[in-house]
Image (tube, rainbow, N blue to C red; front, side, top):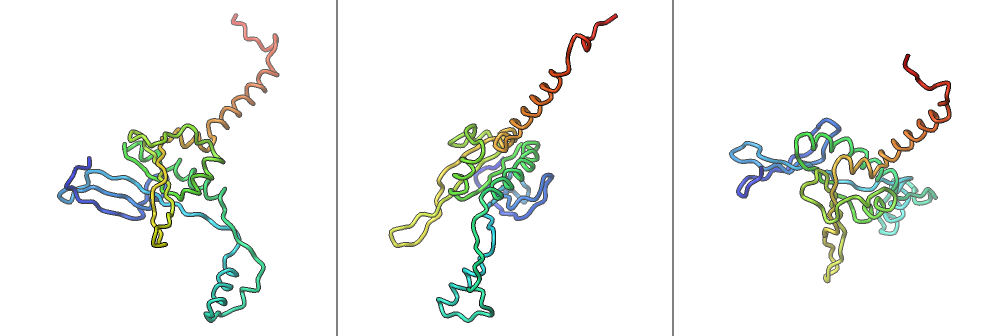
Length: 200
């Protein structure tokens, strides 16, 4: 367990059952690991290509370019759905390992991504604010403009849950219930007096 005075280490890209974890914040004393927390950072995926926009900016800034990509009409955008679904599936795989070893995993996202995820997935069961006892934590950050027009990264919210909760976010239990209902309906249609088991 972490104690004041322990050394803190940041270790990147560690493979665990369920995938690779971006970072670990490790507490060590006398060179021995005493505690750790996994940290995943999630950015947004894009669709299309940003190259034409890049080339238009370079042209506007009078920076030499090697092509005329600014003439392309190809567009780009944020792939909100794929980003959100992918990270939730990854967290669902990884959190089982963290729960098995009784440790925490923190997912760090942009506030706008968390807002999207909250609208598109089932998030009403998450603890808000986060509960220290949960194994899975979601921290959302936003960029705030300061008085001097600089930007500062600030925490917007902290949510938490566990492996079952991440499964609920993905609708895994709902899908299982639908499958169960389908099986029950199929069985219901086939049972009759002739299928009744009567022991001899």
